[in-house]
Image (cartoon, rainbow, N blue to C red; front, side):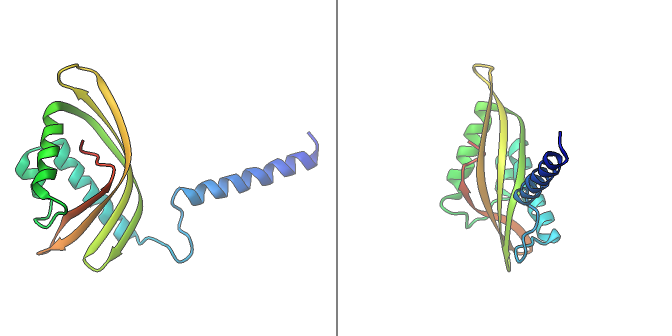
Length: 153
C-alpha cells in the first residue's frame, strides 16, 4: 500500500471511531449528563426491573406511584399476567437518555428480555425502547409513567 492510501485509511478510521464514540453516549457540549443523575437513573431502572423479575404484587407496587398514569392497577395486573404466563430468564438494559428537572427524572433506555413460556416451554426474546418517568414522593422515587414499549408484557 502506498503512504497516501495508508494515511487516507487512518483518517477514515479516526473519523469513524469519533462518530461511533459520540453516538454511544459521549457527552455533547451543553448536553452533559451529570454522573449523579446517570447513577440515580441506573439505580431506579434496575429497581423496577428487579421488582418485575422477582415479582410479587406488593413488591412491584412499592416502586410505582399511587399517581401512576394512566392506571396503576392496570399496570400491576398486566405485569402479573405476564409474569405468571412465563419465566423471566433475564432482562438487560442500556440507558441512553437522562433528563432531570427538580423532583422528576425521565430515563430513556433500550432493553432486551428473554422469557420461557410456561405452557410451550420455548424461549422468546423481545426488545424495545422505553422511557420511565419517576417523581420523588415523600423522599422516595416512584415510577409515575411508562412511555414507549412496555418491557413487562
